[in-house]
Image (cartoon, rainbow, N blue to C red; front, side, top):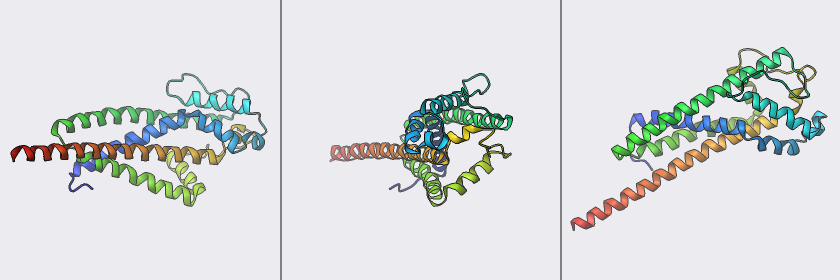
Length: 224
């Protein structure tokens, strides 16, 4: 347990949380095997009427477009898309681009903090940052477990100022290959990544705490 910590440690904890959540989002966006697995688990070919190969081709086109490094417009290999649907995916891309930027900024900030604290021989922030990073994912995880549909709706209300995310399967058939449970699995993966990063941070704290304790005991023995 942490006996004492500075108020600034909580702010540092926020920096690490932003780093972990942005890493989780960026990793999940690019972790295509999750969707490939869900194609089978969620029976997407049967529910959508498209072949597995066609589903993968259109999904890959969407993910390629969502990258901030992709230049050009969104074009699905075999699916049609309405202007409002294209606009929605542009807004989604903007959100993903924000998380890429957040990951870079928070990483640079976190590294700077680590270097500064190492010179001060201060490790208390590691434990505080770990605990701070765990709280929100646990709350979100509980909300998802209680009522995913409502949580999903609230998420869209917060991040989007229009209703373009409400797709018509006729004009935007891509929605047929993007079931809600897939997004739930994405959310769970992001939460898992944040929790794993938080655990690693706490283990690092315990490691350095143990080393400092050993050095302290050795210095005591030398004085005897």
